[in-house]
Length: 609
Image 1 (cartoon, rainbow, N blue to C red):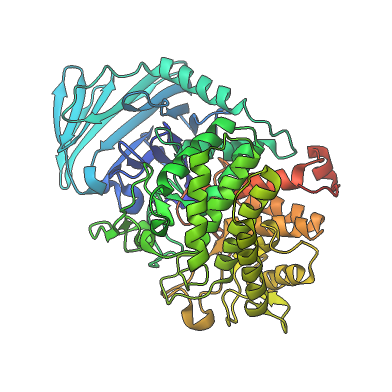
Image 2 (cartoon, rainbow, N blue to C red):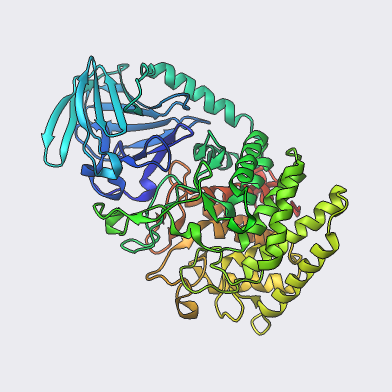
């Protein structure tokens, strides 16, 4: 059975995540971290590349599924002629070792069940050695070891491609059959597995207690809280970093080559992340994210990267896994990300903007942080005019991208404001103000097409870029400036597919990104459009677009990176932090002064964030 991207839900333990399909199969999980090699990689291949199916013997997709309220505990149910059965999936927030807990619960009738466990380490390339360890089964290969504990009798079938652990059993009303899969390094002693029902209770309490800390009480609370839980699930707890997604190489175009590894942390997300966390009351998470950011960017400002590993490491070499056929034949499957070595001028501005937001939120500014920001400004002063690869990691020639210059302007603007508003003294504020004004004048002269009344993707370009929608949001120009309004209109007109936005036109300017193929509409850009429409006063239109975007979530409230309006499918890596950050921030902007009843009635208050 071929599942779509939106057919997957996730569970996680704040260090990694598992993707579970509507058929009850775990088809993707990396251990012990988000960016570790996968032991279940069927998502990018077939069952033979690693999967764990647990469901009715008759097979098929579930009848319904949901998360328990306010949690990351997934319940999947099947209604069969012979009865009704539920599978409860969870990963307890990790203390020492990673555990996947699956509980089969009989609801009515008597349902024959089956489980098939194929462990394949190193992204489906390594078949482990399986042994009996008392009542448990153990699978070992190199540094990796997994233990399975269950009261169900498992059999091992040695088939082409490696061993499969199987079991058949039947559940009746009120019966519960637990399975606990525990990972640890093969050279370390394993601890006793968690007790399944106790882990369920503790995990449910953890998530409900966490989301109770949300200060959001607007009209889209269910959607916002699900997005916040998803963002928390993508957090690597030891460092506070947030992975851009839980997956690699899910395609932007089915059968295409735009397949990238998103299991890392992007600086472009910094300001959006802090806006979302601070705006919903999660100050501890915002503080942890800021601390990660400061550690990651520490060092020579010239060495600032666009992305880092979850622990802050810099080297993310890109290579391909040629034994994996890819999601629906979309190759290559990539590990690592070569864009880490690109020059993107905007990240200096985005880092400075994020630290300004942290300062404004009272997240303990310190002298060393300010000294680092001054070093970033010194470097940016000498290099803001350098051609770069742009926000979207273009693999074509470097250009004078407008968004990059706008964010360079934002970096100097935030420094000037820190002095003017924060009382800092003995700083070169006049020099920073002069650089800021010079960037502003150049962008308005070179990056604006007066004939079309719009800013362009780069100097001299005929193409547009959805990132231009951020010009008003970062304060480069006021929302009511005719150039901002004209840019919003032009982006809507020229980058729209059935009312949703592309990032940019891949065919414009002689294939600006240097890549073959196309892409679908990019979800976070559409949330930026919501914000821009709100900013220029078209609030009813903004709310209508926001509601449409909410309808694109899957049945569990999850969003990937892109949406194909032609096929009605989600595309790209999933769940995508950027998309969920956009949802939260748009809800914050739109929802101030509104209630759910106002939204239903079409009443939009004229308020500003």
